[in-house]
Image (cartoon, rainbow, N blue to C red; front, side, top):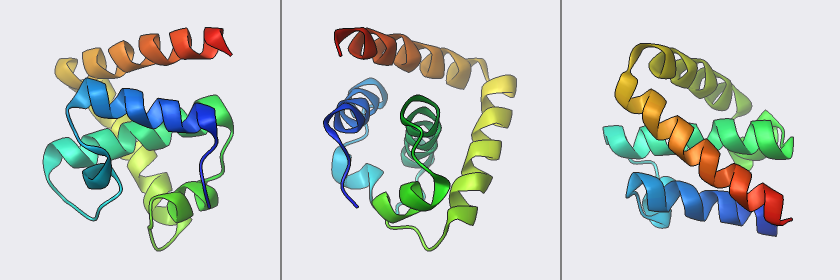
Length: 103
């Protein structure tokens, strides 16, 4: 399953803001910064493009939609409890909204 142009720009923005390169984002890496960036990608793609959990799992080469669902819950908890992650998420959202306005 390929991503559309807007979804690709979202991925590029997340990579730029987090410092995680694209291959790492789509890899199976469990490094904390990669996992956080991947989870942010899931949440933003889900919220801004209405992509399904199943489609996200396929796009990120995950076994099933359950891993995406768990990641979304985990990220929400992290945003609520970690100022660092909250600021990072808000920064990325601001950039995504600029891109969305360009559409």
